[in-house]
Length: 181
Image 1: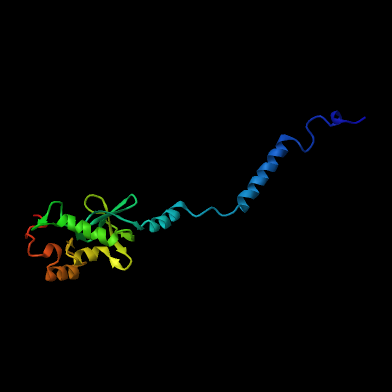
Image 2: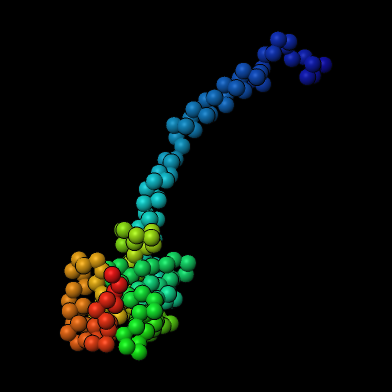
């Protein structure tokens, strides 16, 4: 009678450990040659994502005449400066008037901000923001509630128009030092 015990001694047969190991080694070699290409490098993915975060949109909360917040992101309007707290022109608190002017144009509307490459001196993001076809930065300067800052020419026309029309902080009731020392 033949049975399992009739197999020759000495390990002859296909189930020897060295044969199993050889089969796995050949299989692994074939896999490494034929495997699919690896995914794109992580650096390329980060660069693509970085391009997406250069623009934010949403309903804005106005902090003051040149600062807004969309969600948790806070933006200083790039290229302009609004009056500081407690600045008055006659009976008008121009800090509050500038804040209210920006709030009026953004109220319950979609604001889109494109972040500048350079943050401000405090490390806060600077941005050019729009509501539909209104450039908020230019609007605030032209309305007289902000000035071009730094003096680089970006909003020189709007500031000249506001000065000529004596709008906002350019009214005769504003002191010459409204912008501080």
